[in-house]
Length: 256
Image (cartoon, rainbow, N blue to C red; front, side, top):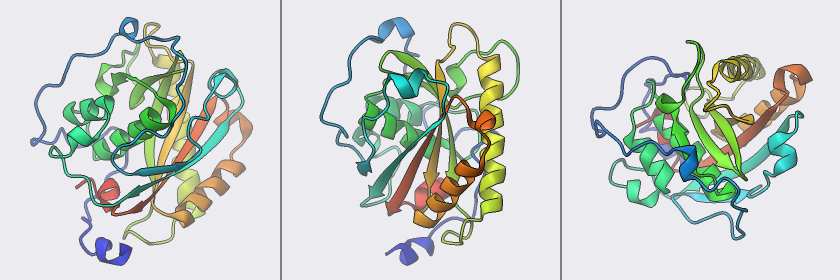
């Protein structure tokens, strides 16, 4: 199945680092209003029955982020799988996303080819951790110009920043190397520290999640190895969320 999907994958790939091209002209020019923190019930307890239904089948460590993970200084890691029965088509399938996911797809990000990976990283948090979307990438305010975070959510009453990237090699199916994994992981962890230092007091988060969309089990195994080899100081105060995708998932890695 996957071999057939690879034949139609696009070769146009960009890193999820908030750079490069502008928004997709097929998307609306304007999205709904930003949600103010006052509009979210920050102290609402989590509900049972996760993962919520949605586009793609989620399994694994759902509903596991609680105060020790969200407020403690120690790093932690969470693994889930997200399997797609078919590719996501935007904007036709927006009604199958959560409210926050649909809002992200309707809101231009800061550029690059990361819109779909960011939206589905959020979908995992919404469906597994019942996390409302507080701010999209361009809505987060910073005191100084520098590295930025992709989105901000609320989990168990805590504001949490979320940085999103992908673990894969091109052509799709090429083994992911430890060297590539370590280079990207170190850069993303350094970017997280920089954006945390620069975020405004109004939008300051308790902690950040580094969310990876990982192409297959091999990519995930290499990423886990790179995480284990990263020194504690570099990954301190960060939650690693690894979403291993499957099925008709090439759109996540080609953004089309």
